[in-house]
Length: 127
Image (cartoon, rainbow, N blue to C red):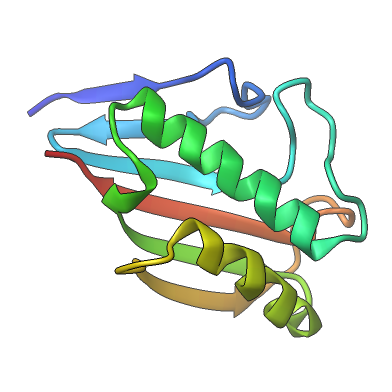
């Protein structure tokens, strides 16, 4: 079982030494994803709903590039800078996983850029 590094032009290419995602067999591991659009611009400054939507659109694009859908996501880890944003994040999050949502952990953290309100990692299992 080999490793395949995945990229899509629908998401900004990472400027640090990591991949958008890595596929190993039928598993896809999506890197921690922030609210940067494909042009490298932060979307939704100070708006948790807009940032959550952009993050999940980025994850969706990477999963689709691997040949899957959001229904294939089995696990996420949500990193929030402030738990006051939990309800807004959750409101958007549930629209991407309306049935059989993945397991999830949510933790409060400091992120590398003070304008980032959220970062999400995802793991998917493809058939």
